[in-house]
Length: 196
Image (cartoon, rainbow, N blue to C red; front, side, top):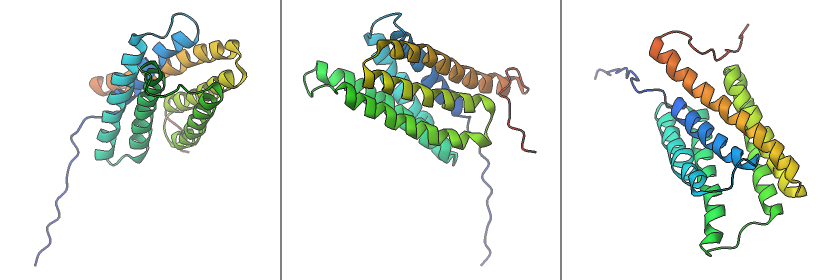
């Protein structure tokens, strides 16, 4: 019996820009709040649930379909981070559960910081733009954890400004991928790692 070898060509789009933009735009909006520019409103919560949460999960599932373990893990994990964060804020307001204490939030954020730091190691084989996103996100989580642990609002405000930079870097990285693909050349550089 003859074996048939069928080569499947992947013609699906790159889901990474969707995930990066969902993460970046939601991060910017939340960190304008952390920096003290405005309060915590339904605008942030809705963005966190639908775009930061659901869109990243969809992007992660699309990365899985492409066989990309890093993208799957990152986007699905951070998508559920946003859904969890919204639940931590909304559930106590609905009187379903008690809200987390400052120490509990510090542990929650520090754990996400450790996860992000390890994921940053995975970006060392990627481009500098993505490395910056993950490095600055790890710093953001640790700063937010420190702010909650100490109760020092100045640290949380500093974290807010740092988070705006982190979110903008993710937006840049996502849009660079879109524009570079559309134009078939480097419109916005991603600063590839020199493999030599």
